[in-house]
Image (cartoon, rainbow, N blue to C red; front, side, top):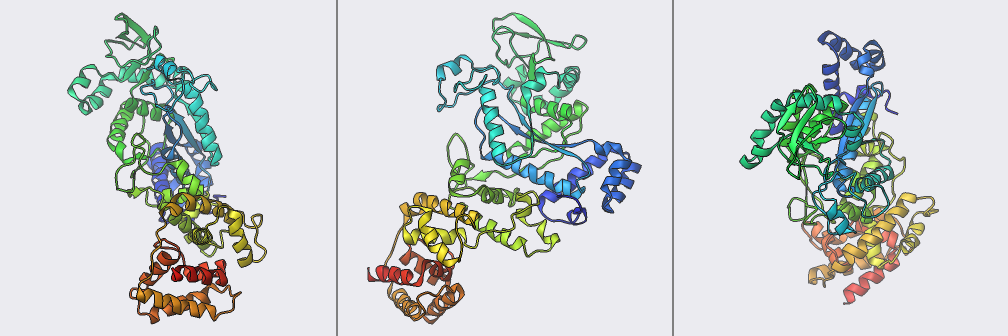
Length: 552
């Protein structure tokens, strides 16, 4: 699927290809000598990546991309956007290298973290309170379905990712700590304790500096993850000494799951031990990335490639907060729009702050459909820059929707449709032979349109009476439409009459004419092409709608 595209990927402007080129440059830089790299670049730029991999076995080692998940809560929009965007970079990298350099995508769960807060909507609050401070994979599952709270949320994560068809490998922090995956790097961290402190202490307040340790021991007596000073270090034995909760001095090894690391050193530990090559993160973590990069180097690792994306804002331009509950949630988007429309919105301008609220859903849905329609007419060099190429991993569907989402919304609004079967009454006449079976995407969009109308448009409808100029123009348009054959479904022909009526009435700018039509006839300030709406709704029904509203 990704073979034979490297010559196009080298010059592609879409941001995943920019990231892929950075990732390839890093891979060549850290795996090959200067002389080897020069030859490998020549081969890769000549479309002979497979030959470069055969010549230099170091390139046959998988390039590892990673995303992180904190299982103290359920997967959410941030989880989706990070996995979706990283998947886009992975697809671009595979195209850039003609799929000759193997890749892996790890979804890493920080399930060794101690439980610090209890969400008020969780059941069994008293039981969770008893387990406060323990690793999430030790905390009992309040839902009673899994062996731990961490396991419950990890299962939800995997079901979430599987539902969207992501290709990933799940990795548990607990498994890495207890299974020895991190042991070697933990011993290096113990040896280079002072170097880690040199990075971390300047970033902390005075009180925090006095007690900070990169190691968080797990109390052998209470099972809780403790934020306590490291009183002694024994590099030769691989142990630390700390004061346990009962005041006794306790010595534990840093290996085998007896400790975990503070999150910035933990991030660096993970990058180093797992050999992570790429990980992106939000703009709010820029300073954390810098600190973790320095610690990674101190541990003998090479920091991964990556970039910092902007955060979403609510309708008022405020940062979205799960605590405040502002902005649009993932579940809300998927109530009103397709996953593809969400992926399209996420693809666009990741380094620009964007407002995330319900009004953006129809626009994203239609822009996605427009890009999907354009894809079939584009040359390959244009296709790989088209968002739908990245949304669908290089394999966009061949057919889109013959009707826009905004037009479906206006049909629902005009007919006050309670379900999508009403819409199909119009659609099947407008598109001969069309049915939910022959046009599954259109059927899906019809269902979303009904849901969006009921929740977002119907409660906010605000009809108004036309002014004298608008009434005269609408009566003129009514006469023009009445003069056309009643079974006319020529959207362009109808649209021409709409334009003519507006122009003859002297509307300038002309969009004020269309705004008046929608406010008077549909109780909203905008919509799709009126000609397309009238063609599908039917001229007799459109005339009846005009009579009803103008008569009022």
